[in-house]
Amino acid sequence: MVPQKSYTVTLNVLTLKLVSLPTHQGRRLEGNRFGFCVTNHVEGIYSPLSLLQRVEEKVFVMDVFEAIKTRRSIRKFLPKPIPNEKLKTILEAGRLAPSAGNRQPWFFVVVKDLKRKRALAEAAGYQMFIADAGVIVVALGDSEASPRWFRQDPMIAVEHMVLAATSLGYGTCWIGAFDEEEVKRLLMIPEELAVIALLPIGFPNESPVPRERKKLKEFVFLEKYLR
Image (cartoon, rainbow, N blue to C red; front, side):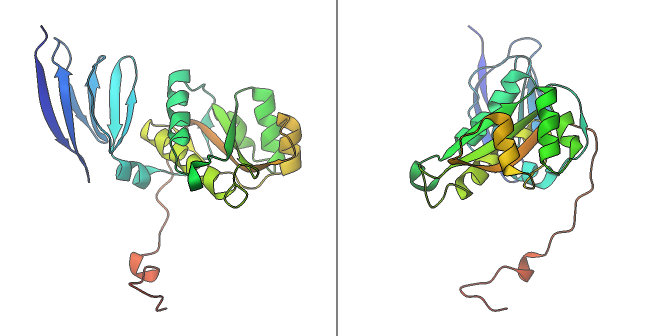
């Protein structure tokens, strides 16, 4: 029988309890700047409040707030493919997003083909860096499923993907400027669906510095608007 232990790991703003963690020889808890990782395959991780990615050799956890703080809009990518299991994790984050009435009025087209990625980049005002990303996820809204919220809800799902991708070490960039009719033509999207956003996801080839944000006191009010 393999001995098991419980650990409590405190990240920036969350405390996670990891239960039933096997202590096989060679498996160890290691610190890193995002939180921790456990080397080799492990079973029994319980972490409902953070982003968790299980892969064959390691389990990485990044605190949600850390992912929010470290996210950047990446416009330079290394032309490398994203492993399917990690892409699936990113898409799963989108699937779990909330939507009005749980109608989930979205579809996502995952584009990997280089020729098609270049065509999408041209349709997005010749922002050719998009084509270097491992994939481009094209988010679609279904007005029949949710006539009032078919644009907002897919955006929530896309941002879930953005944070999941960040937690896994990938870069993303929201693309909202594009020729919608050309995107539909390229991807054979039916007329009744709306193209909401393009999301390139890939290995970042730059490290942009944080851009200045307004202070909370500039836009947060108590009880009523007082500006």
